[in-house]
Each structure stands twice: as C-alpha cells, then as structure tokens.
Length: 151
Image 1 (cartoon, helix red, strand yellow):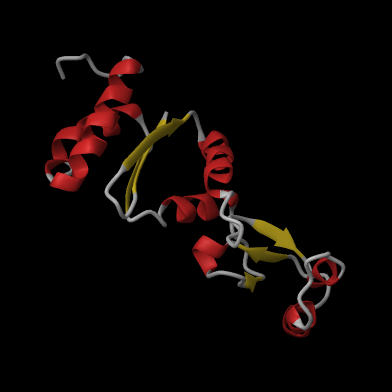
Image 2 (cartoon, one colour; image 1 turned 30 degrees about the horizontal axis):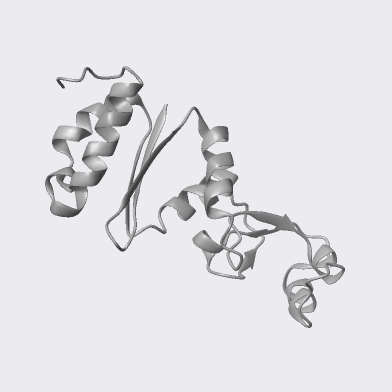
C-alpha cells in the first residue's frame, strides 16, 4: 500500500492511499487532472499536435523543427513546466509524483510499515501544520488495521 499526504497552502491535509503504482497514477489523474491548464502526462508528436483542435499556431511547427514530425514528445507540466515538451521519455509515475509534489507540502510512504514508523519520526507531524495530517494518517492506518488504536 502507498500512503500519500498532501498539505495545501491553507495547511489542510488530504491523506489517501493507493494499492500500487497503477492505482496511484489513476487517482492522481482523477484528482489533479481537473486543473484545465495543467497536463499531468501526455505523449504525442508534432504531427499529431498540428491536427489537434486546440492547436496553437506555430507550436507544432517549432517542435517539428527541433525534434522532427514523428518523434515521440512527452509533456508533463508539473515535471517539465507548463506547456513544455521533450523527446526524453517521462514515465506516468514520474509525472504523477510531480503533480503530488505540487502541494505546499507532501509525503509519500511506499509501504504500510514506513507510514506507521514515520508517525513518530517525521518532523512534519510534530509541527502545527502537520497535526491534521498526522491525525488523518493515523486514522487511515487504524482503519486499514495496519496499527492498533492505541499506537
């Protein structure tokens, strides 16, 4: 199980989990994909951009001049910058993690044991802004029977 904590600028914590990497990617696309100006992950070519309904004049042509018309181009706004393309491969996981990292503060624990251990170790949970996150993570771990209520 992967446990994710996102804390926004108002210090509100959003604590959630994913069963595996594929589930994490899917959930990030659902939660963060609503931001219309940001693309979490995209794979296209300059040729495909040229025929896209939202084509901006000059964009596809400039990319074709740099990379060629049929070179796979990756877009991951949270990772590369808004509207940027590159030919170097970007994974959906990398792009999704960058979207999570766009929160004011965040933590990702890749297994139950680490999440439980970090409740006592991570300085975030000792701070004023981390109290809500600590309580929500603890509640999630209790509900999933990772830790006991008296942990």
